[in-house]
Structures are given as structure tokens and as C-alpha cells.
Length: 393
Image (cartoon, rainbow, N blue to C red; front, side, top):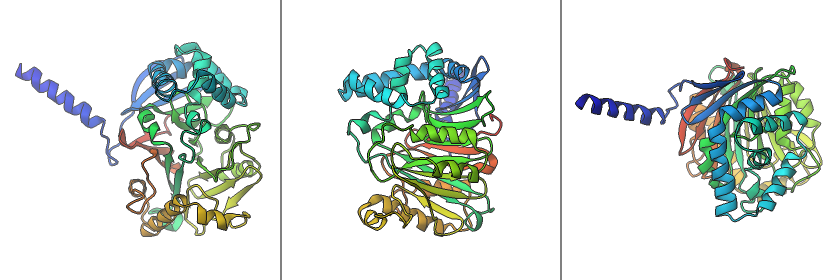
């Protein structure tokens, strides 16, 4: 009995500590299962999908490999929270979800259709799950709470000259209850597009944060509120496409500056050598000047002085200006010292302590483009966890 008791305690401690991954530990990807050319890995609670083939085939792999999570997430988020706890009507959810889905390119629609063939959810349920971030925003339940931060260091600010990028994905704190469903999906289509990794909730086919096989990284911060241009393709699917189509930052820059988004956005992009920030209003798209070579900080206001109301906006922007100022100060404090670990420390610094992290920080990413890797954290759920992308690309 003592032997069994000791074994039980050892296993308990193993599973407890394995879920509390520290920034200094390299959480190994554990291969859980395979399905027709796709594979599911776990890194603690985080799911990592390796998908290949046609878009329909990648959708089938996604649905089969993450079947239990997709069903549980649908029950908790769509049925339990938005329909149940928040009392939103099925008709409103459906209108919102199909408005998001309507302008999707065919290849991304095929991914969702493929999921519906293997997940146990039908296509309408997948369309509803795909829009899970949009319900409180469209219904004005959390207007103004979708705020994010980005900071990049390279050249004289980096310890070795190579770039490291830190990103906070901020939203209504209600989404913290769903961060256990964060998934890094690596799409390797057979059409010649570049393989790319997208970080999002399970079942969501768009890219708020991603990196491709050439080490090109991109993330989106909400811009100044201007409403929606409903007749345009989502900026999040545009980012997905850019990561598939472009191998360098100069190439992608041309596409970004040629785009009018469906909502005001700040696109921060980087490769292993440098980073840039692009400010997209509903009428025009412009590049922001980072101010100093080797350091970029971006929150939710436009900093390019050529915008007609940039000075007024800065005075009214409040916390977004404060968060950016804090990041710039931290950048100077760690000038010449930035490593992935230092960047994690910067992202772990709260607004009150001179950083940018807030109560609505749902997940955090440190991207290392030259290594084709990233670190992922969901505050309150799992600490910094390394996701090596290179062997999966």
C-alpha cells in the first residue's frame, strides 16, 4: 500500500508541476494523436495542430483531432455563456456569425466545412464558434475593451542584434475563462502557399497573431474606434492571407499599405532583422515611424503625425498612450539586453507597475522569428510555454 501511495503522490506532483510551466523550462510537445496526415500535440493545456493537404482536408484533420475541445468550447461559450448567461438571442448570434463568415475566401470556408465533417458539430455550429470573439463587441457588451500591446526589440536594443517581439492580446476579461482553448494551428496547404502558424481559440479560422515558415510575424491591435465597414473582408483573414503569400517584410508591407480594413487596425509585423507598424483607418493606410532604430512599441492609437487628428487623439486616448509610454520606458531600461526571457519580464509587468499588462490580457506571445519559435502564456491558466514551430513547418 505504501508503494501505491507513493506512486500516486509522485504522479500527482508530476501532473501539477507539469501544468505550471516556468519561463525557463522548455515544455516539450507531446504527440497525442494523428488523423489522415494531421497531428495533435499538447504543450501543457495548449493545443498545437499540424495540418496538411487541401483546405478541406486540413479542416477534417482539425475537426477530428480537436473534436472534444471543439464540442466543449461550443457548449461553454456559445450555449452556456452567450445564449445562457448573457441571454443573447439565437437569431442575433446567427446574424453576427454569418456576417463574419460571409466574406471569407473560399479556402477558409473550406476549412470550416471540413471541420464540420469530423468534429461532431455541424457547419452552422462551426460558424457560430468561429465568431465567438465578436458577439459582445457587436452587441456592445464590451465596447472599447479589445485592446492590445506590441513591443519589438532588435539591433542596438537586442542582446544579440536579432529581433524578439512581445505581444499582449487584450480583450474583455470574460475571455479568460476560454483561454484554456487556445490553439496554435500550423497550416501547410498543398497549393504552394507558405506554411504558417495561427494562434487563436479552438475552431476560429482567422489570424490575430501568426508566424510563417520564413519567420515573418504579424499581429493586430485594435485602432481608434471608427465603426465597421461591413462590405469588406475581415482584416484578420487578410493577415492569414499575407502570412501565406509573402516571404519578407518588404513584400508584405506593400500588401498591408494597399489594404483598407473592415475596422481601424494597427498591424505590427516583423522578421528576424526588424519590425514595423502600420496604421490602417477605414479610409487610408500609413506606416508609423517607430521613433528610434531597434525599438517599436504599439498600443491602440495612431502615432504617425500625418493623421489629421493625431494630436487630439493622443490627448483623448488615455490608457493606450500610457501603455505605449510604459513600453518605451521599459525598452530603454533593457536597451542592449533584450532576450526572449527579458521580453517575458516586460510583458509580465502590469500597467500599475509601469508596464502594459492589464486585467483583460487574455494571452501573451513572445515571438523569435529567426528561430521560428514562440512562447505562449495565458495568465491564470498556464505560464510561459515554448512552442517550437520550425520542426512543424
